[in-house]
Image 1: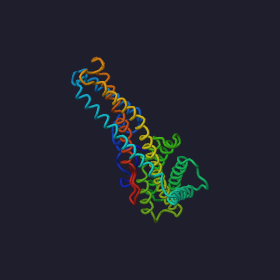
Image 2: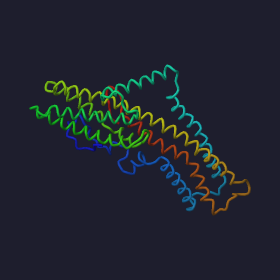
Image 3: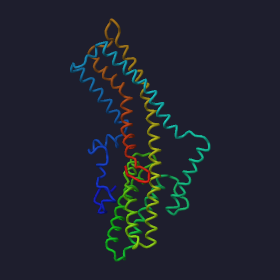
Image 4: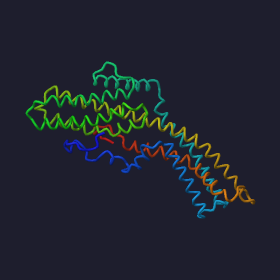
Length: 336
């Protein structure tokens, strides 16, 4: 993906670079928010909680043999894990709300998707496009690049040097953007996070603005064929934006469904372990575990109790970031 270095006018291209458009400037921050496997990240949080509890207990900062304070904290863990039920129900309602509907509603939705697919196929000039959505997007991206190249070649012999220079820069910038996205699409499958990031940061907004500006600014110089090519680029970019938004929506739906399932898988054992740990403390007889083993036991129970929260954190931090960075589809198209 193009990082910087374009020579297009500032009104066409934003000044910020790809790395600084992410919510974290460091490689570690980007790994935490985007690249890390969510289960690995949750496991690291759980391990950190375990080390935290054990370290504080060994240092004497907390006393895990105190029945009142320990049972109180464990009861809070139990109550907190029970709230997972409402969280899971809310997530499932959000996911299923997109799948449920009356027959006429489902039919209209299906017809809309079918018509959009036909429009894309018409724009790229094929009778039947690939069945794989990512392959169809590859065709769209490649066609955008081809149209940009055609626009550049159409004015090779014009006497307007400014026009030749701007169209050459435009075509080169489009080629860099499309080449990066095409490579990501070629190596990915539907639902892969890498392809989502590649599409998320494809700068269609500046391409749309540059296309319209070039067409209007040089309307008296451009041939009808060149104007049609610029019109094609604009329509293809708008089609790409819609397809990108749809694929991102499908990805978010998949992530939320996976999160709700994992919360149940982790929440039930966590609830059982935390509840059993409360029985370690017996009235009048102290704890039923040797004092030396209590810090490790308490740390393990605390880590297990935090496992659902760690899992929720690892997923929500990425999902919420993607939502906040989603390009807007409106009369004013914006990149994320």
